[in-house]
Image (cartoon, rainbow, N blue to C red; front, top):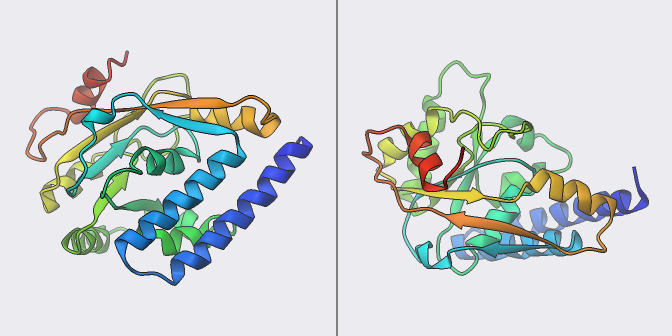
Length: 227
């Protein structure tokens, strides 16, 4: 553990709790979106990491979507927030129970706009009811369909089927996003030293109809030319 990683950890804890408390005091989507962007930009700036969207012209400015993204590191949510900064799209994040109870992220996650996914529950009806409620309120839903961080060498691991149910039940078009850079490696490098700026590349795909009958993961792979 380096001195820089200790400093970054302390500052990261401060940021998540500072913005977590500010988020608790606001209720509108716009206010939450602006605070989430401010948090994300502050966190990435501290790590000397910038986000470069390769094809901004494909990003819709408005609307409700099921936004799906690959997942390699804990900084993926801030990366996606910054990538969608110049849109009116606000999404509720699907978050695991562990994040809700985390002493590091808990306050932020509970107040930032999220759907609790408790895999220990035998019934998922409550989760899907919550998803329907937030969509009815005007929110999009952000999800990592792989279900967990991809810690291997593969470009993508198997998608869980639940994301398709969300799209179908709520008639949400699917907005695919691929973070081309290895965010977990970038974070590790930043914790070692922030002297060198790192640029993470994000690419947006074409919108997929929620009624699409094909295999979404296969479509996703072809869209982003993955092996």
